[in-house]
Length: 337
Ligand SMILES: Cc1cc2ncn([C@H]3O[C@H](COP(=O)(O)O)[C@@H](O)[C@H]3O)c2cc1C
Ligand SMILES: O=C(O)c1cccnc1
Image (cartoon, rainbow, N blue to C red; front, top):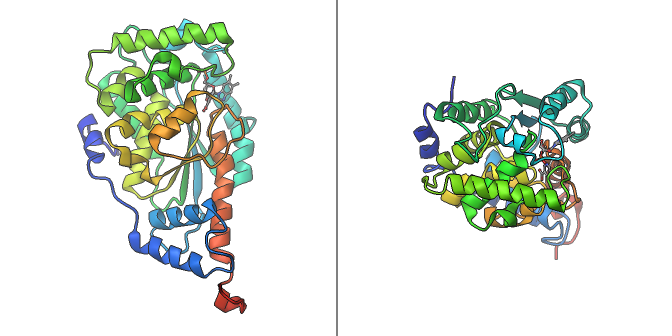
């Protein structure tokens, strides 16, 4: 069953976003105030506990069912030499995910996340967005629904990631279209282009922006024209998670770029999202600022695959462990300040 019957239904969902459970947040805040530590001394761990309480709707949130969903797609624009790697690496890495050999296999395992890899029509790359919209309306709707389908009732945390050679080019175009600025502002080395390569890539991004300059700037049109299947799936998963009150951990520049067209129209969409980390890709810091998200980690990672978010999931687990397991002043017989 498709969650979104039409692209209009997807956009309409953005107009009616659920908010966190205020009573659960208040109860969690009251508990934080009684735990045996100076008020505020666990810093952002305390904020994370309240955030999780609000979206899980309980004073003592927990992570029993956590999933990392990695979406894979291929990009027509990759034929323009915008990546340091060839497009066949997307499918090769999907095989590597299946055999357990990728970074995300190790990092999801370390963080106690179930890993789901979703390949989206890898044999049919999107159209090159410098000459045509990347996707038809049907292709976009299908990708959005593929993202929606991985969100399950009762998930305690959802980590989102992507794999798709060339997708940092699509991400740069989505950011510029959504938030303004030049192609150069949003374009970086991706898998490892040299300075000359980044200049060529920025020219491709600029050509894409010019080709679609007259189109309406709506979440759906921006994703359809400049996005990719895996990026749209992330957008579909983020909106569905919100409807089901599942908290989301976003990864790097590319997975956050999937949210950019939504946030440009409805800034509140990031309310149930945490930014796992700030990637070394230069546009990511600027993008996080536009999304209103402060990253949990800065580890100079620039991989994608959900890898930074998977590491950050361990921080979320730590926040919830302290929140749930610490004694109160009364329980421990410690004098409150
Ligand atoms: C072996 C390998 C594994 C990866 N895992 C994630 N990416 C990352 O690199 C790609 C984006 O960079 P660009 O736009 O420069 O192609 C995406 O697939 C992203 O997930 C990888 C890239 C490679 C080569
Ligand atoms: O920030 C990311 O997610 C990223 C950066 C470079 C290449 N792939 C992914």
